[in-house]
Structure formats: structure tokens, C-alpha cells
Length: 106
Image (cartoon, rainbow, N blue to C red):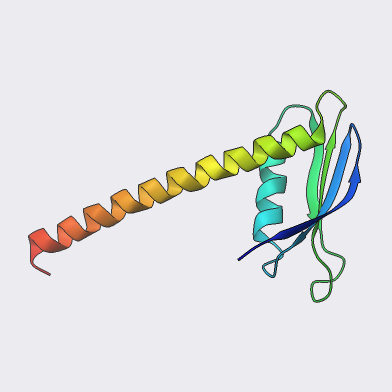
């Protein structure tokens, strides 16, 4: 399912954008949580004015030592790597599960 983005504000310390996704929480929450771990980030969160009619607004503020757009790019790359690792671990677990079923005759 495609996710649209609408830029609200961008300068050397602050990035604000809307995530247009029916889920409303998963992507913004992941971005905010990962951004908070990054050096130079002083605030990262998402805001939903009204859950039925508003799109989530993601906010990343830095201390000026980092461009918030660079932080976002780093966060999205980290999320991609985490998703890939998760899928690899899941595939391995499915293989182990299937092998266990076959050896027990179930």
C-alpha cells in the first residue's frame, strides 16, 4: 500500500511532515522512536490532532549539529535493515518449525 508524504516545514534544525497512511501510527511511531536514538536529535515525535480526520505529523528537531533530513534518511535506512533482518529471522524460524514438524511426524 503506497504511503504519501506532505512536507510542512524544513530548515536546518526542524523537519515536519505528514504521513498519509490509513494505519496512522506504525510508520510515524517507528520514525520517531529511531530518530530519538540519533546524535544531535533533541526531539522526535508524531502528533495526530484528531484520529478520525487528521494525518499524523512527524516532527524531528535537532540541536543544529545535524540536518533533520539527513537524520530521517538515516532512520529510514535503519528501518529497512531492521525489517530485512526481521524477515531473515522469521524465515529461519519457519524453516526450523517445518523441520521440527517433519521429524516429529505431525
